[in-house]
Image (cartoon, rainbow, N blue to C red; front, side):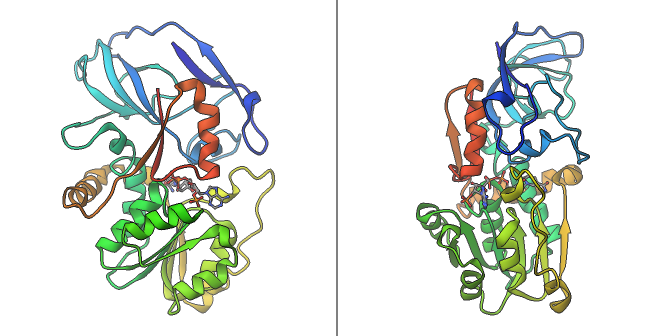
Length: 329
Ligand code: NDP
């Protein structure tokens, strides 16, 4: 059985020297444990942050350790009272073919309700992030103009569709015409192709009365463009800054932060795990919209198994994905 370990901390983009692919025995469960055959691995921008030896909301992955990853699969052996062979589960199993678990942080997946892919996307961590970021941090209200970056991605595509369902005017930003077209198909009111440049002007044209919520997944120049175009009382939801994750030095600060003062706005960050106790509420809301045909759960699934992980991870930063990016084992 194969697993991917962190060989060395990258500077800038991870490359082949960052990783070791190792061959190990298929594990046996100890008392109170079970073994999962991993079938899908979640590729998340946050993984890049977990490689840095810095203080964060989780400790960094250690050198020589299996790369941390959310994943889903099927129980193949069990000495745990709560899990039986054949159960389908998700958890932080890592980039490996077989994982041992004691059940901590593991969820059972109901495949009658949604496919495994969706449990890692719209009904998984990205969907939870979209829901709590928009409703709790963003305090979304009908009639708001909502600007969302990486809008064709895992989190962004759910934010955009939830905001539409809440009666907002939604502007999505994505890379390339194909994604822009896809977002129009989801019913967004305006779409910005970030590759076409002059973001400040593009945001102004799309939101002449200003932006009430900017759901920020990327940081960088687009954050400045959003700050320049806020409406009074706006909320800037700091979800992530994917444009900066592979930079070797800290990015420039937001140049237009004084807009927060001018427009009586606030900018607030959040970590999805703090909402763990309320995931059920978000799952019901998102699954309900899916069932009513009002929300599309999209995934891009890459092939190649765990040895394809190093390349697959880079895909996130090239924007290869529409919806949630997953690696099939
Ligand atoms: P996505 O599916 O959105 O994938 C990343 C996307 O970012 C790409 O598809 C690409 O889309 C865009 N992108 C990549 N590089 C750049 C760049 N240099 N500049 C601008 N855009 C870029 O990932 P997720 O939905 O999983 O994550 C989105 C954000 O949410 C990330 O910042 C992530 O860290 C954050 N996050 C935060 C959580 C929290 O608790 N706060 C929890 C989960 C995620 P395109 O080319 O179309 O623009």
